[in-house]
Image (cartoon, rainbow, N blue to C red; front, side, top):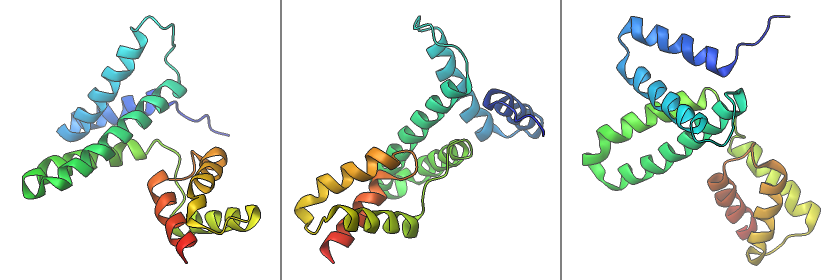
Length: 155
């Protein structure tokens, strides 16, 4: 069985490829991630450079880009270029993150929990969200869960 490359090694290989291809957007996002990891390593917290650190950093940056995209959308045409750049960076980060459930799978999960716990009112949205996030936090998108849960509880 082939040994899986670490995230660090994968990022290094992607950076080398981006340099050779003169791919500035990829180089920029990798440099940003490398700087964030380096800051964490130099923070004095005693953290070591592991795949977990890289994943945490990438996840945090992806979340930051998701919020930025929402802000750029509000800016209309003026935010289009920045939105495209942030979307590119988010897509790059998503290559390394665990895949989230799609809308159909999220709805099935929500419906299963509603039936299992006897949730039958929109007033119980908080309870439902808690149940989903407690057991499936890494598998679902919180915003999508809220949208699906609202639809399921209203219907």
